[in-house]
Image 1 (cartoon, helix red, strand yellow):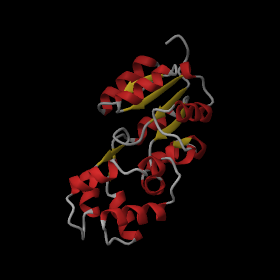
Image 2 (spheres, rainbow, N blue to C red; image 1 turned 120 degrees about the horizontal axis):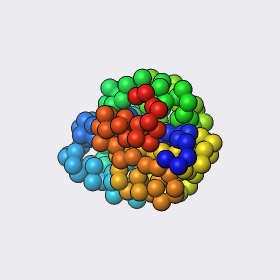
Image 3 (tube, one colour; image 1 turned 135 degrees about the horizontal axis):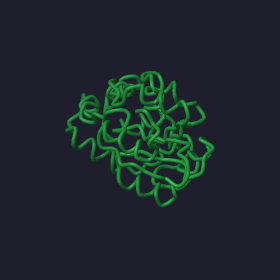
Image 4 (cartoon, helix red, strand yellow; image 1 turned 30 degrees about the horizontal axis):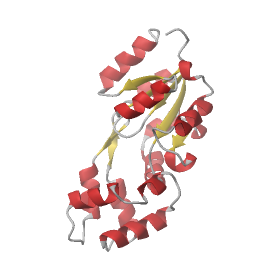
Length: 208
């Protein structure tokens, strides 16, 4: 690197937290005739999906909207439980990674996510202790989602670093390429050891 690495920005889903969408869909399918695959298709093509991901719909309104659309009998608490089942409670990375990085790097999270998942994530995973509240950049908070430059710029502002001093980590190539187009270093996440090796290649002094 021509400039010192000062900040590391992580995606959450499939980088820090394993996603089990099938488990969530099984819960959402309870009491209705639709299959999990049909429910997933309905969610992905829902005209209000981006409004939900970008914070323009409140959780209670999303519950009412989706359960009415699916014909689901789930009450709000049951819906939340099923919705959060997609988040595997066992994290993908060990806390020692963040503890080491936090010694001399500014850390941030950057995720396309919703308020229900945010509440569960922040109350469940210990790695949040290494990420200041102001450096947790969620699409539902900034009202923009990857690959929009808006959400990347919000993350850079949070870590107080220039793009060339920052690395972004995501499992989705489109988002990795979006970060690179803005001047950030970027790593496409595959598995834990590859991530550590790629971080060391950017900063050989890292003891991770």
